[in-house]
Length: 190
DNA sequence: AGGCAATCTAATG
DNA sequence: CATTAGATTGCCT
Image 1 (cartoon, rainbow, N blue to C red):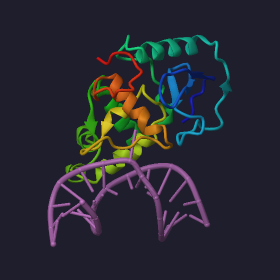
Image 2 (image 1 turned 90 degrees about the vertical axis):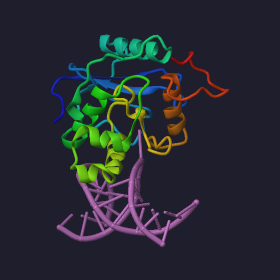
Image 3 (image 1 turned 45 degrees about the vertical axis):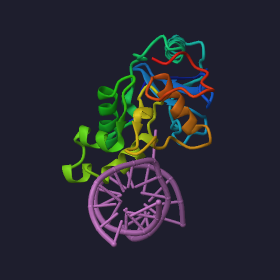
Image 4 (image 1 turned 45 degrees about the horizontal axis):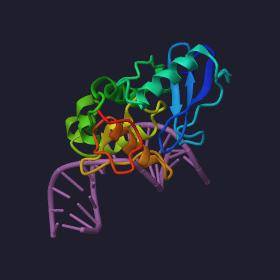
């Protein structure tokens, strides 16, 4: 179900290894945010798009992200437009958004169990893989904290490309879930 | 330490 | 429509 109102599209600078992110916002909230223009999660065609970087919405989103990356803010607190999600994906992403806060992490398996979207039998194992796939198709980077979902025995994956995993590390370091490395260039982690 | 099966969705022919 | 390939996991040798 595409949103009916016009959507503004713009980019936001970040200190992430992957560089700036691309964002799209409807009148209801942030609709889409990706690390790359050619990210595996692409902005769907057919939307009524206006490429406006000076829009009020763009300014607010950019400011919130800037505060977050600088360590001045622990939650983005931006409204979300869930239009691009549905079914199981929406259920799991909303569960993630509602239950895993700044500085916390869950494993793929735990999230599967917690969301109650799978029978107890499946949630114990195989469902974790599906959760991973679902995370990979998150339409809204960072605001929906897919980076806080990790493997039972390590970091897990993150998108595609050489910058993807370093980006996940960067975010988890910022939030204090990982110890900073010697080349850490962000603010003092919480 | 390494192999295997189980679960769902979207992309592909 | 059938097949495939995933951001996994726990159990088995």
